[in-house]
Image (cartoon, rainbow, N blue to C red; front, side, top):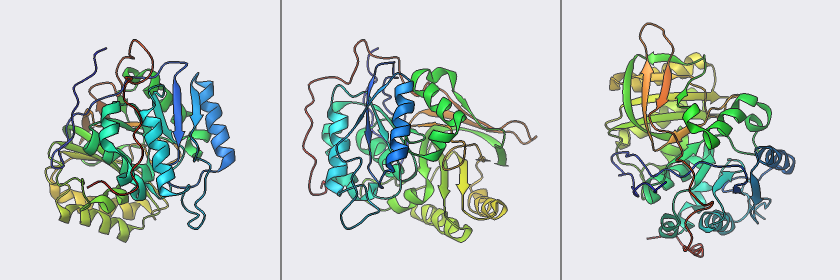
Length: 348
């Protein structure tokens, strides 16, 4: 299939982004660790799942690293960035899976050579939590659609069959999983909206606001958000910062996932209703993605329809185009784009 034309989302308006090809058995896929240290036993178990899907996972050199002084990081910033850069620029690699989240993507995102990443073309990219920083960068600096989905060394991926199967279907048969929504999904604010999906872990979106290359508006966007460990007053502050910064200006609708360890859900619901209610846009709660026990894979950068019936009917998020394209005639990304050495200083 001919590749889609390259598009980069405007900081003030989400736009449909360039989708990568779907995967096929035998595909060579990279595993990287852009954020926190990776438990060895979970990594090995996750690699086994990928092999069971017929994929050929390749663990990049610094995935098992721990920073010598800052033990909450999976190695030094430049090394973590170098792994991601090398994986993306390797024409034999068809997908990049993050091993886990934690913290650290903010520290290395500006060390990546985004011009080289754009030149290498789109690839499947999967992660959530701290990886939200990279989802936003791939959208705004490269123009690539990505997958907000479970990571290979996380509990949900290893222990929840529905989580694994939804990701597997998205990777190999995305047309079979166009409609998302667990039975828990409900209308916090009823209505229907259409827009381009973007978002992720909401505390990371707020931390990104005001930084170079960050969003300055959201006209025509459908925001998907979730988080973990944020008490109601902290979630209030996170949403208030996004509202005050103008980053949510023109938003079409909101889809909420899980709020693990964020306090009693009735208090979380009250914050969401208080902050989003005055916007006059539909809001779905508890769709079923993020840090919860079952984590659906949500495509980012593609058009979708949010449906939150007022009569208590089933609430859904329906993707209008499959997350991934039909596979290329030959495996791998287009050749001819050598890996560019990761930058040791932020890009200007």
